[in-house]
Length: 360
Image 1 (tube, helix red, strand yellow):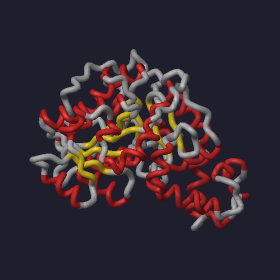
Image 2 (cartoon, helix red, strand yellow; image 1 turned 90 degrees about the horizontal axis):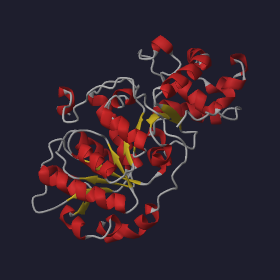
Image 3 (cartoon, helix red, strand yellow; image 1 turned 45 degrees about the horizontal axis):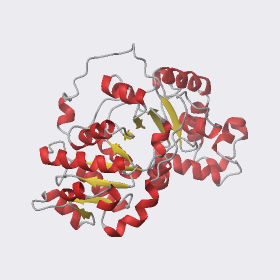
């Protein structure tokens, strides 16, 4: 789809929290306000005489109320960032030409599940590639070890089939192991799949299989990281909350007692973002056992093949509240964003990961 028109509020969000419009400064240390910083700023706006953040663009800096700022340096910083509006529009158009569009917490295309669940920890904006309607489809998250064995992957595939057949989408991080198995199976079943990648979206859509799935409308990528960002451990950990916050339920296939799956799952349990379903069977991995002790809900992956649908497989206490969520929203008729078929049509070996990714 084409870049939707953005409200004044969204323009302020992007100018204050993103690199867009910063030109050559786009990846400098001044990356803008983070989620908590933005929410603090928005609260100051609400407490002032201004109607909304967008009001800042309608007034000169001399007309801004003083009680919004903690000091003059902050006011000058905001004034400088908001002066980039023309650059913002140009760079949004450039992103869209590459198949990427942007949404913010003020737009109907922003995933309501994220803003409702994560609150002040929700990213104020997202870069997106793919169908917007996939972001509003109730989804089940899949997380697990990169070192998952064949049995883990088989259970994952069976669960994904049940999830798709029951009208849900799949939420994944796209990493090697359980993430990739859930994503590939979800796409084979016709989707929808939403991936929250650990690297920038522009880097992802250079991969032929990813770009093809986006063009087919079955895959949507969403990220708050710079489109050209490379993988790093911080971004991998930071995106975990998006999977847990977006999902109706998150299923842990296999977890260690450290690493990304463990950290994301324990953070979910601490914050109660989504019910954490933890696979439990005869030889339950130590990490899974530890998550169950911390409040995870035990589920038997061996029984999914005998269930008529995903909802039936859930523990009885969860079934009633899930049935109403399984109705998918009607599919948007908007045209898909078109990653350029001629650009960067690199030969990507889907079985090959960067060495740094394998260490995560």
